[in-house]
Length: 157
Image (tube, rainbow, N blue to C red; front, top):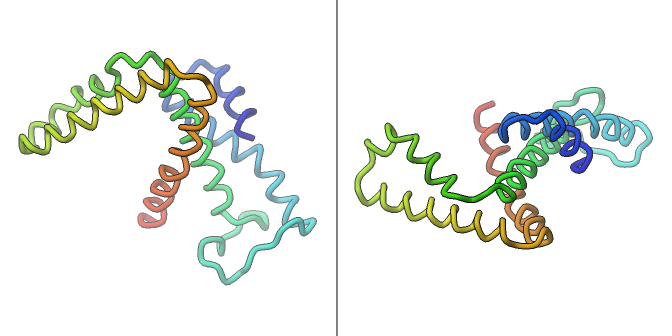
C-alpha cells in the first residue's frame, strides 16, 4: 500500500504537504478493500468493547482507516523531506514564522534555533546517505509522529 500510494501521488507533481495528504487518502482507499474483506472473511476480528475501534465504517473500524491514512502521509512527508536538497530548508521555514519568534524569550528562541540547525544537519546527512539509511530513518521516525498525530485527533474529537 505504501509503495502504490506514494508512486501514484508522485505523478501529480504536487508540493510536499499536498502530496503527503494525497498519499494518505490513496492509501486509505487502497487499504479499504482489504480491511473490509478481512472482517467479512474472518481473517481477523475486533472486539466491540475496545473504544479505539468501536466506530465502524462498513464493518471495519474507523481507527484502522485513520492509522493507514496518517502513517502513510507521515511516511511520504518524511521520505520527501529526507531526499530533498537540505540547504537550510528548516531554518528558512522557521525564519518565515518571525511573528511567533518575536513573542518568545531569547532563551527559547536560541533553543528553537539549535533544534532547527540539528534538523538541517540531519537532512543534509540523510541526503548524502544510502537509500537504506533513509528508509531506516523514515521507519523509525514515522511511528512516533503517527502516534502523536492520532493522539491529537483523539483529543480533539
